[in-house]
Length: 295
Picture 1 (cartoon, rainbow, N blue to C red):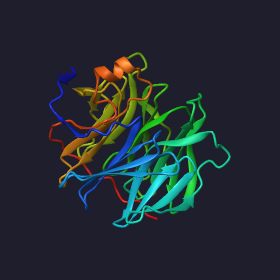
Picture 2 (tube, one colour; picture 1 turned 135 degrees about the horizontal axis):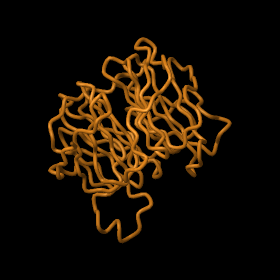
Picture 3 (spheres, rainbow, N blue to C red; picture 1 turned 90 degrees about the vertical axis):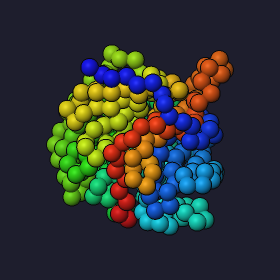
Picture 4 (cartoon, helix red, strand yellow; picture 1 turned 180 degrees about the vertical axis):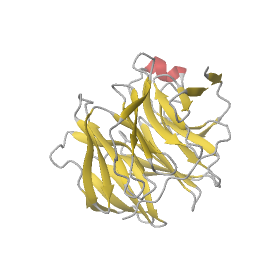
């Protein structure tokens, strides 16, 4: 039976993003980073001081992977770029879908091997227009095709299991992965089938015990599943469209979640002022930091 918890957290940042996505945490600087995809912005929040910065971007971007203290890899509608943290300058790194200008990047995450999985989708969310790619040392390999809205890309702590979903189908997939390379080592199977439930499976992270934390878009909750796919707890949030969770804090023991107000009418936005904010659940978790991308 799923235990349901009311929201007892707080707003970490009330800058309301149209489509907040791709949160990640840098333990070296105690900083949370996330995107407003449709607003072409990269957001930065220093947890120790509360200092907030918004970095305008020339393109829509959705995923940030740390390379080292001075560089980040970001996935955008025009491919992958290395971002200099100090200056914000972008240097082209690798193409994703040069032949598909109607597509953009969406969900993604770094595998423990240092490789990156990144999903693409149509800017108009057309059926099966996107894919999921494996990126390692600049080499881009398509691993799953025919994806409409790629989400929930995450990995077990030992790197042997990968997860992903097509939010339009609403099935969380599980696939064996080579822990040394981050490449799939088997065929995907359905771990969670929630096609007939309200809301959509959106972004996910996996904690130190292998439990999956999933933001359920349209349902206003973050769900926690055990490694067998059983939903054991549900945490309500004050925004109907949570998009992706992230472990934050110097001990990775806090959980933040991005949200969005995309598609909400004026009445719906007035009813939920937290829509588009960065929220914290207010619970203690056993998280893990996102690995560094190996360039």
